[in-house]
Length: 341
Image (cartoon, rainbow, N blue to C red):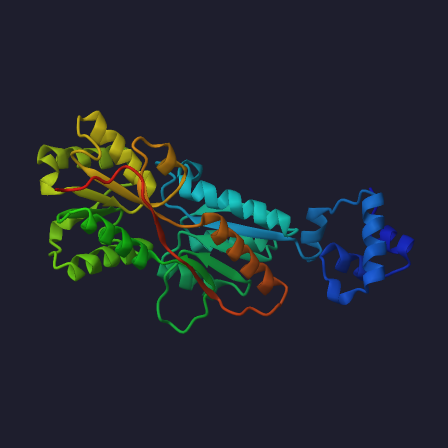
């Protein structure tokens, strides 16, 4: 296998120049030299030795995608449609940018940072992170980090984040429910109390109720479990009270909404005839469910692209206009919400 030194000798340049071409550092190499070296790399079918690059402290071209996932006892990360979709888009964007993706799931910040250091990772994209862990990530390393869908403490630390209008999305959906005549609705998410994005979504739900002079009662927020058996047991207990007077159930994710819709219909409850159901995300389940799910839409592909671009600009030392990006919310109105007469 040809080496960098051999490529350099063929081109009549230094090994560092060849390395600059490999890493895409066009500002350090003339256009003519860059093209000459690039052609030699292609002609010789050069392949980078990743182990040698890491041991030699060269840039690894590896971006770590960390999912802070505490549910490994119950669910594989790929089983969650939102995470599966965004991880797939991240891999595509990272690869097309000339980097490699290393996916790591962990409930421990220390464990994730040790992994990143041992592989000489150039930057991290972190999903599903709560405020305390976000602070621990930033304090624990000097490498660039971009979070997705995170909320932070006002602690003076600098965070990069690609997020979503969680408050506005929930507010808009609740406004739509009210416009359809619903006056008693429940918001369901996993967490007692909910945290991060779910906390913002609950705030949006409450704000719409207040705007429409509808009282929020303590039982209107229902914490549910990510464990299927526990979640179904709770939903069946609600069914015994014929869903406690609610006319609509607003779930914090499409995964939970479609799962609940299936259970309700299995138990003889017509959706949306007897109970309306809506969700959040607009993933593949929302289209494939019957009835098709009304939900809050977010552009997952754009979120992954923006996060990748923001991180790579930091890795390369390029100008970053803003470290905080927030995508706009919209509604996908389909068939799972009925009108209350």
